[in-house]
Image (cartoon, rainbow, N blue to C red; front, side):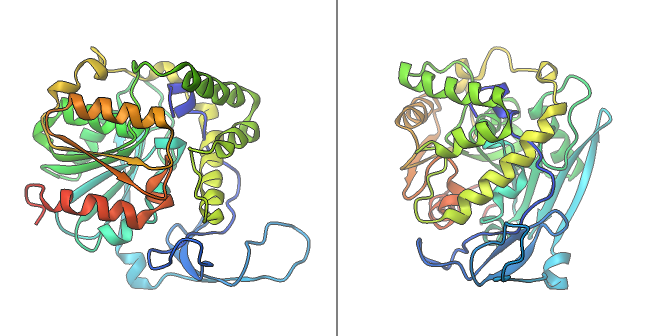
Amino acid sequence: MESIRLRRAVRRFGTRELVCLQPLDCEPGVPVERGLLSTRNNRRGLCVGLGMIVRSLISVALTLVCIAPSPAQVDSVRSGFVNVDGDGLYYEISGEGFPLLLVAGGSGMDLEQWNRIVPELAKRYLVVTVDPRGFGQSDNPTSSYSDADDLRRIQDHLELDRVGIIGLSSAGGLVLEYALRFPDRVAGVVSIAPFFPGFEFSAEMRERLDRFSEAAKEGREPFLDAMLGDPHFAPSPLDQPIRDFIRENMARNYDKGAGFDPSLVIEISPPLIERLTDIQPPVLLLIGALDHSEVARRNRFVRDQIPAAVEKTVESAGHNMPLENPRGFLQAVGPFLADLPAGD
């Protein structure tokens, strides 16, 4: 999201529906048969999709058979909270190895936005997914705070010396800020279409962002209609279930944001845009080939400012690449992560 208001405009949505996500071993456009299951009480189920998701309350034939996760799968994911100034920060941990910190909040989604890549990353790395304050199972803030300071508290709590850190959109900007402020704690950064204040967009792009902001003032459904109707935000042209998943995740976080006070956010000063040249850890910048051309221009700006930055484009993805094309994302980050100190 392109402002605090937009970042925090997407919150919690009553009861969840069943949402099946296309697995990594399916080609785009092939009907989903297996995937990840997201429900309020079961965050890590697997499902076998025999048809469309049942959405109506009237009696229809149930065509989706859900299989509960095995005890081994449940035991492989640990979760907890870190108390920071009375607010709980929620995290989940999977796998073993060199630690990766995956920060949620980008595109107004909670840590389930990483669902399609965590299982693969956890085969080689210790993967920690984090809900920032105001998202998912973390509390809304009750006092002034900095997201970067919160991440450091989580890293200290888990006794992780150095990490690879990954974020998307506003969280992509956050992980760059984190690398700037705590370079000794960061081995490398993967920043996907990062947002940070101060970049001068074209008039057309400013109008686009204004449309999102105005829709957010009208309510949850107009806002989601505007975001999902945008051809660059979540095109997923061959995978409608992914668009459904994104909408559901954004919806519940939009509602959670009703209790969020943006005045409590402590912004970095001087701003990040003026300090990109000071970022020391290596940075991999990613952009979806279907994302907006102005977002791609911003990526190139960041690449040219950070001394140790490289950029890659992932095909068949818009702004929400890890959900839209997880295979392409993993192929893009694989060599970079393997080259991080202690990443082998």
